[in-house]
Image (tube, rainbow, N blue to C red; front, side, top):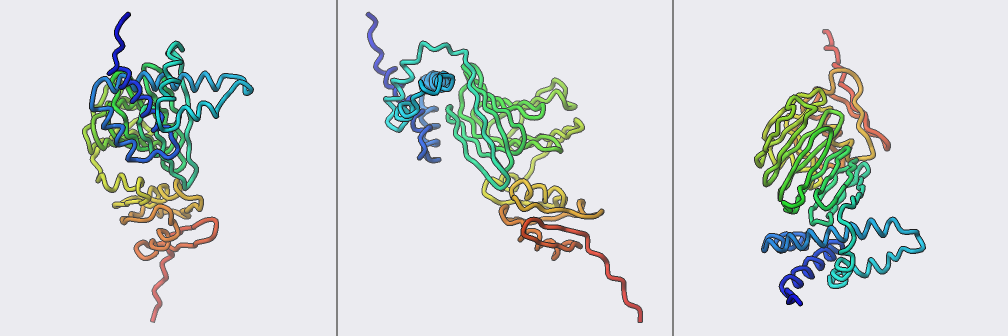
Length: 323
């Protein structure tokens, strides 16, 4: 009989406890930070958590496929509360399940809503308003499909399972990094905040070429295939995560698109010669009325604020009186 590797069992139990902790409803940002410290402390931690996570995801898929009368959500919930060893038993008991299953989940936000999502691998996502993503995990790859909107990704490092974000033909591959991705009618963009990512977009003028970004770099893919690389002010580019909108010589049309993505009361531009006016400043993302009211002080526009919408028109010049 082979001797029991007690160290391996302890690490496996710790990994299961971390999975339970990350799945708990009262999970905090401090929990996520502590988990990442544990994950990087020993290479065996990553392998153990990878194994436990895969088994849990497969268990979730198997449970979802059972007839309703056979499901036992209360038992599964008790197995995943903080304490960990029940989760360890669950994962160990399901080790015989094939690991070629694919697990999917969809997350979305409405206008004016933001949402923090922590995935089973410990990666943390912050979804901006009017955003939709699909998560597809299997034993070899972690994939997120950003269908529209904007999201911040803080990725748990697992070299054995690459983390890939797909959006509008753009493919971003990351290992232990943080970045923002946005997708709208104008195109897609990726901004690297920490670490390193590889970006591909065969639909753009890059063709098959891959671009490696450094922290602070942003790559934008226009709908017409153009590729623009720049280095925006990171505080400004990340302001949305704190409920603020930072504008710096921004086209009025683009500024209004930011507010409209975050608020049910929409801002409308009426007439020619308005959308290309430029505006700068820092504004509360949840207060479009205050933003619109300030425009008449700095731009040649008139603003009409109603309960359901805000209308901005170019101010008519008053003819000079004669005499």
